[in-house]
Length: 397
Image 1: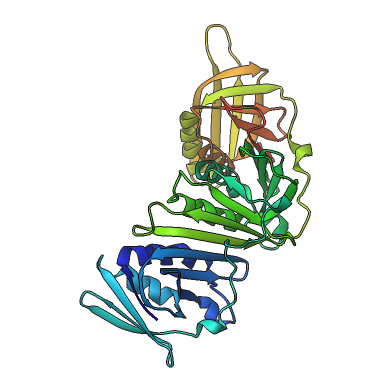
Image 2 (image 1 turned 135 degrees about the horizontal axis):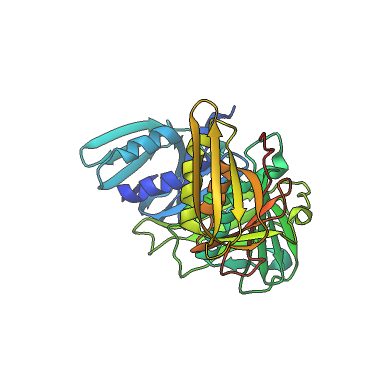
């Protein structure tokens, strides 16, 4: 193999695929990145057997070939090089890869690519339900993932809750995630009708990688999604900006699906409320962050008191946090309050995460009673577009 490419392109490709490198594997080759020539481009691949990522970058290929190189060493070495052309040549017999960039040279010992697991690519994929590829706008998909994936559990002992339920139904896409203490559900149109309904559980980590890579996607070209006929894998094909001479050309994210039944979350979403407060999103987030400084030493508990309008005074939301060892904090803000006065306690961290996922100027907080879940929605969208549910904390007061 003899191939040349730009340092910044190789660095970008390595950073994209390295997130799929296995950190704790008994197979040494899974700690490597696969480098292979592919139709006058350089393809980089990595897998931990649960998620696989392919990335193609522009390159000048003089001789085809492939090898696998230790991911950490390759990443750190390439990142240290100047923004010049990198020339790579592989000695097939010894699997030694020689790299030269400006006045820097290195030889890195690799492992034969034949020992690397076979990673599927989107080209020739079997397709989505009904045999068609589903096309999604990069910005819409990225926003939906960012508004949902954070609510998934990080506890691997509950594998079902580490995933996001992804439901294709006619021309609607619904994503939902919960860790048992909070729920985030987002529904949006996909601009096309799928031939067959499908409900999948995709690992939240895999979707987060799709969102991360799509931040540098060509917004004019849709992200293509395919589901394997056996319903055990989902593939995302992402087009990069430009023609591959700058940044990455295209990338695949292939993820195993979680074989389980997702909890029926619809029953925990309150259908009515006794108190509704409409709040400025940034101001609400600010007073929650201030309260969290004291709450983090007391199980993250913050107390919310919603007071309706009295006379000529506007309604108010008051946040209180108390730490036995640090002190206490009380903050309030104006609110448009509908209904009766109410009090509830929440985990401040969950409130911070929920508000960070909302991009509208105003947000509504719906409360029934102290022991019932609270609902947060952006103001200005349909009631079913984006809903977050937070379970209340047990108040010691």
